[in-house]
Image (tube, rainbow over all chains, first blue to last red; front, top):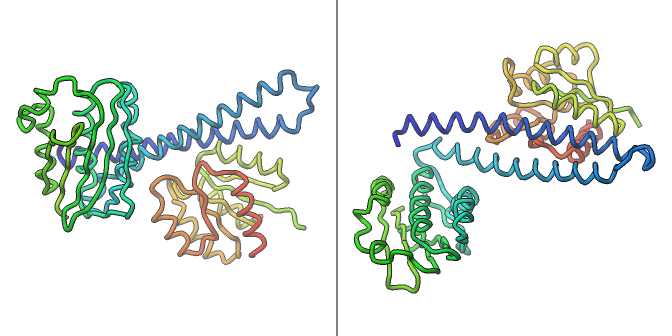
Amino acid sequence: MKEKEVEFIGKITAGVTHEVNNVLASIREISGLLTDILSITGEDSFPRKEKFQTSLQKIQNQVQRGVKLTGQLNKFSHLSDNDKSDVDLNEIIEHLIFLTERFARIKNITLQIQPSSKSVTINTNPFLLQMALFNCIAYLLNHLSNGSEISLCPGKDGSKYSVNIICKGEVIDKTSFFKNPSTSEELLSLNGIMKSLNGVYELDETTPGIKIALIVNG
Amino acid sequence: MIDIRVLIVDDEEELAATIAERLELRGIKAQTASDGDAALSVLKTDPPHVVVLDLMMPGMGGLEMLKQIKSLKLNIPVIMLTGYGSKEQSIEGMNLGAFDYVIKPCNLDDLIAKIHEAVKNK
């Protein structure tokens, strides 16, 4: 995607998340006010008071869920603010998992991080890195069977930064999966992204399960 | 113990009014202003003990408003209401002399605690 287009999408998304956050803040305060009023209302003077109280709590819980979602979406919209910035690999993976968990859940596949014990920070393009990781996850979701597990493991070896994506589970079409991934249409954009990131990706079928390694030079 | 009076400045009028109403239920007198000009007029005529100020407002933005409050030399602590991506603005606000900040949607108990702290430190 071209820089200007990415910037445009980022700005619009950031603006809308601000507005949605204000809507959620209002709902939270209004339901909070109703809870306040109920709490000073006598038991006998308000029929089904308890039902109202539990329903208001459910509204508050949903607001909390909405706030978390819009917060993460806002963070995503700011990924394109800078061409390069310091990126904590643990953080960016956790963020991506939060945003993509739904796609995995639909396929009944577990998506998780095995965080690096030490913080691994790389100076790179955060938007492209997210996109590369997403491409790998999307590729795996298309080829893994129900009940599989995908683990993302960040690491660093000298000046090379890596994210190993290790999968447990059956590949539906193992021959086509490994046959010629570099020319696979699904991975065409990943090739271009890795080039821009000054990195490569490798598919490894020798390890148990499947492993995709994203290697970026720092 | 004094009756604490708070001015909430936020262009989200319904949000400001509801926070004000909830504060009132907890014994804190609160009035609202939906823009910088309305807020300045309250500050000049009936200064509150604390200002709760949204940073993202159309027209006179929150930081500009904060500068104006400070220039009036009324010694009124300002608690900023910040949203997403306002970290830099919050830091700038603290450097300009804001008392503290809370993130929207804020926890009312946290806001009240900060209001009390601001009055105590005044």
